[in-house]
Image 1 (spheres, rainbow, N blue to C red):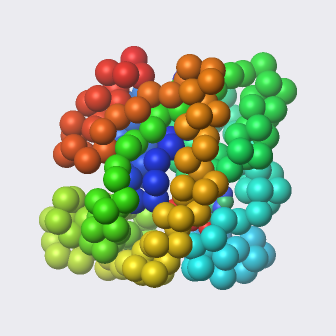
Image 2: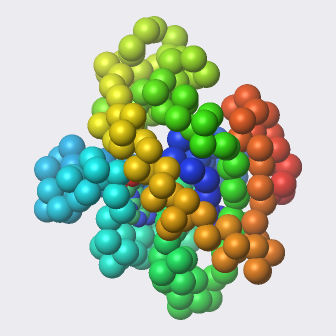
Length: 213
Ligand code: AMP
């Protein structure tokens, strides 16, 4: 299965992607995660995108598309994958359709995790991430077992720099302007599956699994 996750930043796409990937036995490709790991390692790509990401803006399409095309060409993606955070613009969606067509593949689903802006703002304030393994948590909705410590690898949790309140508002406005139109784009080919992302995490996963099976 090849699918993408749509939804505002903070809608829970990352968490749901991980769970669906486990369920369907396919890898996840998170462009945000790839960028963060490059920033952390100080690679050429990381240096290029750091300031853009910290302002809550989008990395140029050309850079992002090249990175995704390279990743979906890896052998572990042969049986399918879940894209989290890509595409985020109409040109990226068109580029993805072209990448898939070139390989004789098609996109099966665009899952849309729907959460209103006011809930997003509240959620982002409590979001924490493990800088070491990338696991994500929330102080209220998905706390780690030990306060401030990653359950998976034991590293100290941190807030993403782009989860700062003023950046969140910018990311939401970028989302409405650039990414929300993708719902219509994929609706036209009947590939959108929308779930209510304000439900508890397990219920969102269960609804997604039902809709995608
Ligand atoms: P995310 O973890 O998906 O919220 O992504 C974090 C940040 O990485 C975004 O706010 C963008 O600055 C950048 N980013 C991630 N995916 C993309 C994409 N598909 N196109 C452009 N920028 C992206």
